[in-house]
Length: 156
View (cartoon, rainbow, N blue to C red):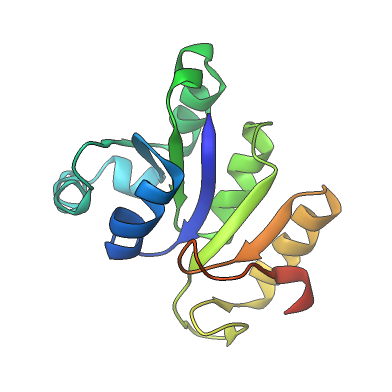
Protein backbone atom coordinates (compact mmCIF):
# COMPACT_ATOMS: atom_id res chain seq x y z
CA UNK A 1 0.00 0.00 0.00
CA UNK A 2 1.34 3.41 -0.95
CA UNK A 3 1.32 5.68 2.10
CA UNK A 4 2.68 8.70 0.20
CA UNK A 5 3.95 9.52 -3.27
CA UNK A 6 6.55 12.28 -2.98
CA UNK A 7 8.43 14.32 -5.57
CA UNK A 8 11.78 15.40 -4.17
CA UNK A 9 14.89 15.85 -6.27
CA UNK A 10 17.05 14.77 -3.31
CA UNK A 11 15.10 11.48 -2.98
CA UNK A 12 16.25 10.19 0.46
CA UNK A 13 17.48 12.77 2.98
CA UNK A 14 16.82 13.92 6.54
CA UNK A 15 13.19 15.03 6.10
CA UNK A 16 12.32 11.72 4.49
CA UNK A 17 14.26 9.53 6.91
CA UNK A 18 13.54 11.34 10.17
CA UNK A 19 10.06 12.80 9.72
CA UNK A 20 8.08 11.28 6.85
CA UNK A 21 9.03 7.63 7.36
CA UNK A 22 8.00 7.46 11.05
CA UNK A 23 4.95 9.72 10.57
CA UNK A 24 3.65 7.42 7.84
CA UNK A 25 4.71 4.23 9.56
CA UNK A 26 6.46 3.38 6.30
CA UNK A 27 8.47 0.16 6.26
CA UNK A 28 9.61 0.47 2.63
CA UNK A 29 11.12 3.39 0.74
CA UNK A 30 10.75 2.83 -2.99
CA UNK A 31 12.78 5.05 -5.30
CA UNK A 32 11.38 5.04 -8.83
CA UNK A 33 14.06 6.40 -11.15
CA UNK A 34 15.52 4.95 -14.33
CA UNK A 35 18.94 6.60 -13.94
CA UNK A 36 19.45 5.78 -10.25
CA UNK A 37 18.37 2.16 -10.83
CA UNK A 38 21.47 1.75 -13.06
CA UNK A 39 23.92 3.71 -10.89
CA UNK A 40 25.64 1.57 -8.24
CA UNK A 41 27.32 4.56 -6.57
CA UNK A 42 24.00 6.42 -6.19
CA UNK A 43 22.37 3.26 -4.83
CA UNK A 44 25.09 2.96 -2.21
CA UNK A 45 24.86 6.65 -1.28
CA UNK A 46 21.07 6.56 -0.94
CA UNK A 47 21.35 3.37 1.10
CA UNK A 48 23.43 5.25 3.66
CA UNK A 49 20.62 7.80 4.11
CA UNK A 50 17.80 5.31 4.61
CA UNK A 51 16.23 5.12 8.05
CA UNK A 52 16.87 2.10 10.26
CA UNK A 53 14.08 -0.44 10.17
CA UNK A 54 12.94 0.47 6.67
CA UNK A 55 13.70 -1.41 3.48
CA UNK A 56 15.07 0.59 0.54
CA UNK A 57 14.19 -0.49 -2.98
CA UNK A 58 15.54 1.30 -6.05
CA UNK A 59 13.80 0.42 -9.30
CA UNK A 60 13.24 1.76 -12.78
CA UNK A 61 9.85 3.41 -13.34
CA UNK A 62 8.50 0.31 -15.08
CA UNK A 63 9.81 -2.09 -12.44
CA UNK A 64 8.51 0.14 -9.63
CA UNK A 65 5.05 0.17 -11.23
CA UNK A 66 5.12 -3.62 -11.60
CA UNK A 67 6.08 -3.95 -7.93
CA UNK A 68 3.36 -1.55 -6.74
CA UNK A 69 0.66 -3.20 -8.86
CA UNK A 70 1.56 -6.67 -7.53
CA UNK A 71 -0.73 -7.97 -4.78
CA UNK A 72 2.31 -9.14 -2.82
CA UNK A 73 3.36 -5.52 -2.19
CA UNK A 74 0.00 -4.67 -0.55
CA UNK A 75 1.25 -5.70 2.90
CA UNK A 76 4.07 -3.15 2.77
CA UNK A 77 3.67 0.48 3.80
CA UNK A 78 5.44 2.21 0.93
CA UNK A 79 6.82 5.72 0.71
CA UNK A 80 7.24 6.21 -3.04
CA UNK A 81 10.01 8.68 -3.92
CA UNK A 82 10.33 10.27 -7.36
CA UNK A 83 12.63 13.12 -8.38
CA UNK A 84 10.68 14.88 -11.16
CA UNK A 85 7.18 15.97 -12.13
CA UNK A 86 7.54 14.11 -15.43
CA UNK A 87 8.36 10.80 -13.71
CA UNK A 88 5.56 11.32 -11.17
CA UNK A 89 3.09 11.73 -14.03
CA UNK A 90 4.36 8.56 -15.67
CA UNK A 91 4.04 6.64 -12.39
CA UNK A 92 0.50 7.97 -11.87
CA UNK A 93 -0.39 6.63 -15.31
CA UNK A 94 1.07 3.20 -14.51
CA UNK A 95 -0.18 2.80 -10.92
CA UNK A 96 -3.93 3.38 -10.40
CA UNK A 97 -3.45 3.58 -6.62
CA UNK A 98 -1.69 6.96 -6.97
CA UNK A 99 -4.36 9.61 -6.41
CA UNK A 100 -2.31 12.17 -4.50
CA UNK A 101 1.23 13.47 -4.97
CA UNK A 102 3.25 15.42 -2.41
CA UNK A 103 5.78 17.98 -3.63
CA UNK A 104 8.67 18.08 -1.18
CA UNK A 105 11.50 19.80 -2.94
CA UNK A 106 12.46 20.74 -6.47
CA UNK A 107 15.45 23.03 -6.61
CA UNK A 108 15.64 26.09 -8.83
CA UNK A 109 16.87 25.35 -12.35
CA UNK A 110 17.04 27.24 -15.64
CA UNK A 111 13.68 28.73 -16.67
CA UNK A 112 11.99 27.63 -13.43
CA UNK A 113 10.16 29.81 -10.92
CA UNK A 114 9.66 29.24 -7.23
CA UNK A 115 6.03 28.56 -6.33
CA UNK A 116 6.90 27.88 -2.68
CA UNK A 117 10.04 28.10 -0.56
CA UNK A 118 11.28 24.70 -1.79
CA UNK A 119 9.49 23.98 -5.08
CA UNK A 120 10.56 25.46 -8.42
CA UNK A 121 8.73 24.58 -11.63
CA UNK A 122 9.35 25.29 -15.29
CA UNK A 123 6.70 25.62 -18.01
CA UNK A 124 6.85 21.92 -18.88
CA UNK A 125 6.28 20.98 -15.21
CA UNK A 126 3.25 23.29 -15.09
CA UNK A 127 1.82 21.71 -18.25
CA UNK A 128 2.21 18.23 -16.74
CA UNK A 129 0.67 19.42 -13.46
CA UNK A 130 -2.40 20.71 -15.32
CA UNK A 131 -2.77 17.27 -16.92
CA UNK A 132 -2.51 15.56 -13.53
CA UNK A 133 -5.10 17.92 -12.05
CA UNK A 134 -7.49 17.17 -14.94
CA UNK A 135 -7.15 13.47 -14.08
CA UNK A 136 -8.31 14.27 -10.53
CA UNK A 137 -4.98 13.73 -8.78
CA UNK A 138 -4.44 15.84 -5.68
CA UNK A 139 -1.15 17.77 -5.80
CA UNK A 140 0.06 19.28 -2.54
CA UNK A 141 3.19 20.84 -1.10
CA UNK A 142 4.55 19.97 2.34
CA UNK A 143 8.18 19.69 3.37
CA UNK A 144 7.35 17.78 6.56
CA UNK A 145 4.17 16.06 7.79
CA UNK A 146 3.38 18.79 10.32
CA UNK A 147 3.22 21.49 7.61
CA UNK A 148 -0.22 22.51 6.36
CA UNK A 149 -1.03 21.27 2.88
CA UNK A 150 -0.70 23.87 0.14
CA UNK A 151 -2.53 22.85 -3.02
CA UNK A 152 -0.32 23.24 -6.08
CA UNK A 153 -3.20 24.36 -8.30
CA UNK A 154 -3.51 27.59 -6.30
CA UNK A 155 0.20 28.37 -6.71
CA UNK A 156 0.78 27.92 -10.43
